Amino acid sequence: MTNPSTGEPITANVPMQVANRAQIPAGYGLYKDYPTYPNFGGEAHILIEGIQVWLNNAPGFGEGDAVQVTINSDGTTTVYDVTTGATATVNGYIPLASAVFW
Image 1 (cartoon, rainbow, N blue to C red):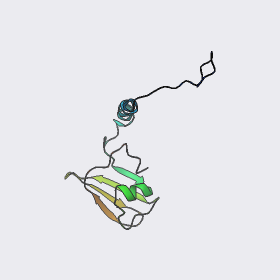
Image 2: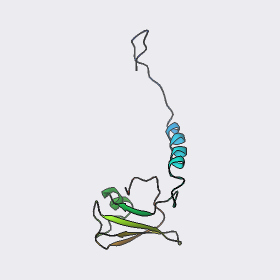
Image 3: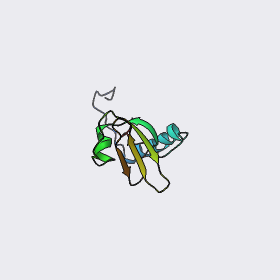
Image 4: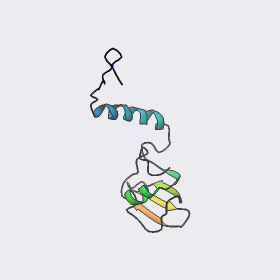
């Protein structure tokens, strides 16, 4: 952006926390009605990032495979690969806001 009267560039300093303050309420507004909010549960297709980050490169999972994600009562999450039959347990929950399973 430039200053219309001088033609010189205009810069703005935006504190890092501004994005966080906007994203948290936006995520809540978008996903609060999802049955497992704030965690992910249900059917999805897995991306390679999900295999690496959430499943710790567990064997039997491939990018694009259909998966069923189940939130367990003991604080873990089970991921079942419908395509290959592989199963992995995540110690914790997969955040709904995570772009791992889409």
